[in-house]
Amino acid sequence: MFLAVPSQIVEAAVKLWAAGVLQRHIIVSFSEFIIGYVIAIAIGLPIGLLLAVSPRFRAILSPWVDGLYATPVIAIAPLVILWFGIGIWSKVFVVVSVVIFPVIINTEAGIRSTPHNYVEAIRCFGASRVQVFLKVMIPSALPFIFAGMRLGIGRGLIGVVVGELFGSRAGLGRLIAESAETFNMPNLFVGVLLLAAAGILLTSAFHALERRIVHWT
Amino acid sequence: MEFGNLTALSHVSARVEDGEFISIVGPSGCGKTTLLRIVAGLERATEGSARLNGKQITGTGFERGYVFQADNLLPWRTVLGNVLIGIEIRDGSRSRDEIAKALELIRMVGLEGFEGYYPRQLSGGMRQRANIARALAINPEILLMDEPFSALDAQTREVMQLELNRIWQHGKKTVLFVTHQIDEAVFLSDRIIVLARRPGRIREVLDIDLPRPRDLTTKRRPESVDYVDRIWRLIEREVLDSIEEEKANPDKH
Image 1: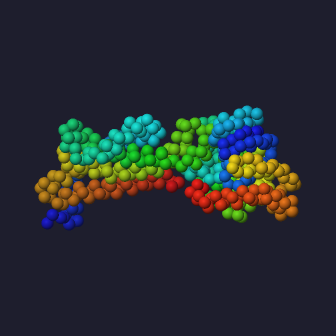
Image 2: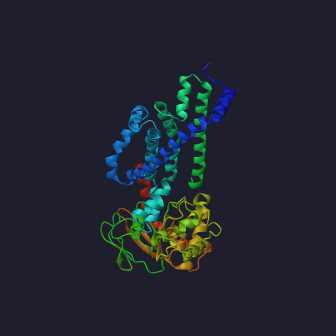
Image 3: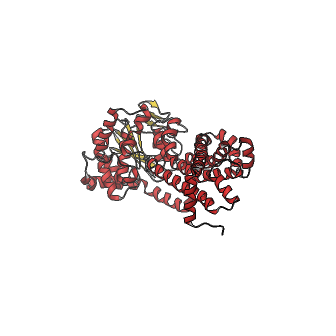
């Protein structure tokens, strides 16, 4: 009863597409995701690097990172809607807040786990701290950093949907919420399956990029 | 060059002449590697001093090239990239001229055709060749080698000894070579410093009077065998002691 067979789902998808509704939902959700994802990396990466190299910075910021990481941002999503409104920025905020943690944590872990013998290999050439950082620590941390960003994809997609469930005008989360309220199972599954597909697509595309850049692992 | 009083090492004092191949042998825990690291500037002597051309060693420098025991080529760089790292650190960039020189060095250590390979694609012996080329790329006056062949199998090791002998003949750099293997030291060296342990100090300095150029037959000569025996007798007691100690506290080693 509360399921839909594949043919119904395809039919629903075609109908939604023909009406121009599906495109709008996809574009809104995708923009929220991409903007949030890019901001999370732009902020998370430098924070992770600073945490790794500066004990002082670590002492100040670490408790905040740990605390906020444990805070269920999803649970305060309604509050976020109040702060940032019903438009895309509330969802962007939710995405940033869930993606940023794997980025920060993996970047810090990656830099800090740089094998000492690599550092020594270039230190014996008289490398400065900056040179050690740029020529050894960053490349050595790249596999970790990429893994963090990859984890962020799934978390970000969930963030988009949950944000939209609490308040939005459009987006795949909106589509799912509306369909659920009207017991329109085919439409609901169109949204769910599209999100699953996005997860697979984005993650595998990222994997391909990762393999090209950190080809030595 | 002189070594003064050092941590774990006391009254180790020796001079190394230009172009000499000097080996340092001794039982585990005699401070061989520490001595080399102090000369490299990676560690500091708590007392005394190490001097290069009369100048106190205060840190690392381009007149010294270090070949590590561990295979620590940077895995994200090709052989050529690894060989050029010292130049990049010194100059901030690499000129066409330097690249040509690095390629020449790679050829010299026998890695021609492997310039574009990554470390994981190379065998242990090839990685050590690349390691040597990396240390030579900055054109150091002195090459410091810390048991560079200890991780290699016996046959590869033999080949690498011959190769190092050839490379040294070619460039006539001063080499300070730390090893556990006495026959390796005899085969390669002009002089051997035999260290004793607790505290590390010089037991004896031997001039190795074997004709050059040397090849595998040199190792089988009776004089070679005599040198090996003599050095072994100097350190035998202590090697046995150190093995006993390792058995007694396995965690410390």
